[in-house]
Image 1 (cartoon, one colour):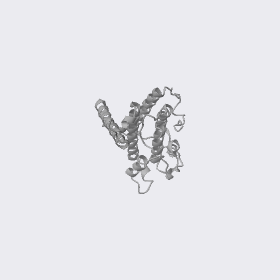
Image 2 (cartoon, one colour; image 1 turned 90 degrees about the vertical axis):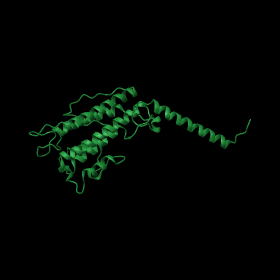
Image 3 (cartoon, helix red, strand yellow; image 1 turned 90 degrees about the horizontal axis):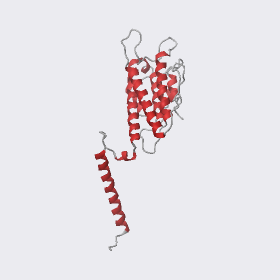
Image 4 (cartoon, helix red, strand yellow; image 1 turned 30 degrees about the vertical axis):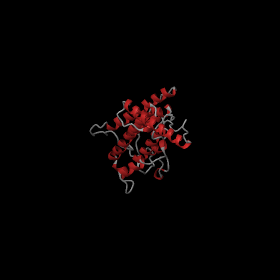
Length: 242
């Protein structure tokens, strides 16, 4: 029997391993029915991880669309901050990694930042306060992750609570008034204006996505969702960070 030096044997095993991985990649890509390009790191993802990725990307896209619409509907809010435009605000909200905490919001985040929007004493940019808090809350419902893999686990109650919080937020935007009796932020049409339900549709899509992800997660975890019976008019925001 021909003697093979240990280094050469190690190289042979490594080459064989690489060949096997390449074959597996091509087999998986051929068998995949997903139209998206195959990525090697997807090997470490279960189907539910791909679903979670898609849901988070979709909700994030809707949050970005909502932010632009709110600034367009409430241009006075942007004027409160000197030398800032919508694109700069978008970068601050959606390109920032980690926790969304800002000095202009007294470092309040998530639900606490959202509440600033409805605080009569707050003199800052209410759109920014609302969306900084809203975006942080959604991120918390996905455990502040940007992508999901096999070992990651979501919590069905966080996702469910976030959906209920969106319902509460919609009610507050329509019914909470400032010291002059006007809405803190304009969304859907006001009396005498042409009907505009675009905001309602955006919120509805986000509620549906969060509820669906909560159901999928509950099935995966084999856990029941604690469904809260409440009136949005009297309810406070539900906890998401736990």
